[in-house]
Length: 353
Image 1: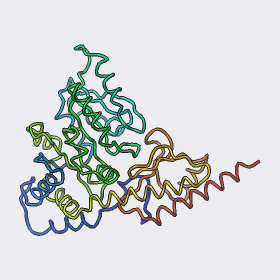
Image 2 (image 1 turned 180 degrees about the horizontal axis):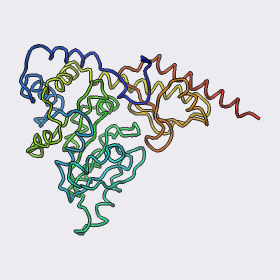
Image 3 (image 1 turned 60 degrees about the horizontal axis):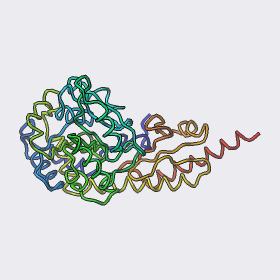
Image 4 (image 1 turned 135 degrees about the vertical axis):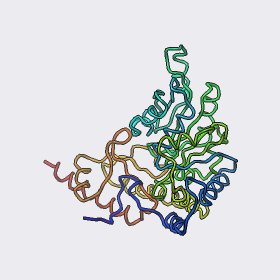
């Protein structure tokens, strides 16, 4: 049975936002050149350059796994390694794609509070071994916003860049929820990317309201040499590229990409406040973007699942992850919080001797 109920499991659950849908509809008239030689791809590329205020190289792929894996493979040889947070998506949820597309590059893990890479931990792992028997560290990958729903502020990014510069590391940014990070920080996109040393950004569109599609942005154009061949070999060169590119035109030209990020973040803050008022519910991480991590009393999560709510309990480091999407409403948040309160009350009654 079909359900129109909006969920908190993932922002991938949400449908296509009006701006992306309209742009795709406009692109669906007549014929256009294939493989990216169309006016929509040209306009989307120029819109990305204007957004970041730099002459960058831009590529469009179907999904984030391919974007991250191909970008890192482009920065590495097979005997190199990528350093990332132990909970980073490129480590826990890419099914080995970075290693596969790089022909064997190794992923090295570091820790850090609230899902953020600690510069000291990066330096330690790089300096731990420098012999030829160890895969040479070449790339530092960070996620903005992080897997825990937190954001790196520019000062933290400056510290990461300084560490990467001293250690001769390239910087890759997984920006699956980049719009949410920009909205949370209130800073321009350039201030948290190339101005603080990011070499390549995987700019997420799907979680921001598109049907499909991620944007790979090389801020240093020389790093993108022959990258188009990688995309083709990996099955990421869309023949009807205009349908990957057009949503970016609709989203960027209208400013919808940022509005949707702001809206999702606002709903997450609302959800956090409502959950904090419920006895026994613990908020696990600072709520800075569109994710809320909460620990519920025993049996509460299962009761919520029984009522039809969907959310994940295995992402991050414990608790339940609740994601707000571009289309999450105040009513959605209030309804979920009310069911949490009811489930907590029942849990307390059932545990009373």
